[in-house]
Amino acid sequence: QVQLVESGGDSVQAGGSLKLSCEASGVSLTMYYMGWFRQAPVKEREGVADISPGAARTYYSDAVQGRFTISRDNTKNIMYLEMGGLKPEDTGMYYCAAARGVFPTARPATSDFSYWGQGTQVTVSS
Image 1: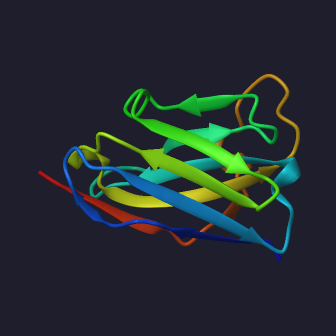
Image 2: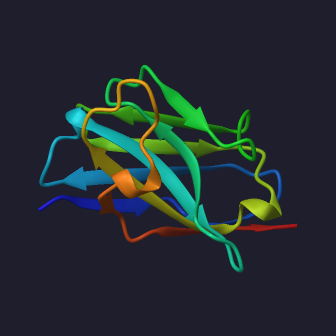
């Protein structure tokens, strides 16, 4: 069975940086679209960033564009999210997810991500 495990979440001060990791087991990520999502208190889950299987396409939400970088290392079966210039509004539970399928022209929808990690908490203090 596919398992995704996030790590790297921590409590940091505004302006700080964190690097999250998502390690997969039970499957190779080669054919999976991968994404990072987050959910803050009193907010709905939102897509943060995603990346195509070969990393040719990436997406960032307006809220994080220019500050976050998504990447993947298929040889290690790991996906990363580098976060810089962290703001209090970045606080939330961060989840990695995988979508198995073909998405030739559009990004996968949230519902297309069928495998999810348990989440790692990111807290940014002002």
